[in-house]
Length: 230
Ligand SMILES: Cc1cc2nc3c(=O)[nH]c(=O)nc-3n(C[C@H](O)[C@H](O)[C@H](O)COP(=O)(O)OP(=O)(O)OC[C@H]3O[C@@H](n4cnc5c(N)ncnc54)[C@H](O)[C@@H]3O)c2cc1C
Image (cartoon, helix red, strand yellow):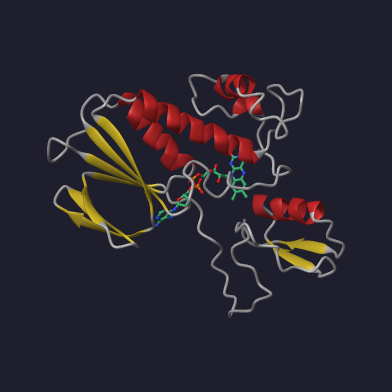
């Protein structure tokens, strides 16, 4: 890696799963001074769309033994779960092993803790700056770029990592309040009457989440998935 100056900055836009792990790996492996700016518009880093859910019935679709964040340490997640067993009481089944499908919110805590540990163990000249803001522009400048944030700040970056995740579906809604474009928002189902029929456009993971959420809210009207986006 070659940089334009002696105090390089890597800006990571998006601190979900990918952005947080890129930051953690940089913190662990940097062997020269480095500033890592981690820009996330959500209040919490580490969770992104998939692991921000607070519905415990939203499970990982892969078992715990296969979801380590480190390919060379396949047992890492399971060890972390066992080590944090008492703190996770109420979120995990009493007995769990490599074949257990754990709640996604627990996986979010795991990613957060990896980032926190990497930050705490990093050398003093390798610094993580967390910025709660939305990146609105990246403009090339010299060998790097200038990143601008919604709240008005902008800064130079030697490298920019785009870890933006999934955008909400681009279906046209014509502002119809009955159509919910961003199914991942925490208040998505707040105004839904329990006897209102629901059409779920898409047959992927988000659809499964919505069915689980409707079920846990004791929704009584039929919900019908139909083929569309994920
Ligand atoms: C409902 C659902 C369930 C899933 N379940 C699983 C599962 O069980 N197992 C599995 O392996 N994978 C699952 N996935 C896939 C999962 O999303 C990916 O594996 C992984 O989490 C994607 O990571 P990411 O970093 O690309 O996106 P995310 O983790 O979503 O992170 C992107 C982040 O970028 C931020 N961001 C975007 N634009 C900007 C901007 N301009 N400025 C600042 N911040 C910005 C967002 O706020 C977000 O936090 C699921 C996905 C969904 C949608």
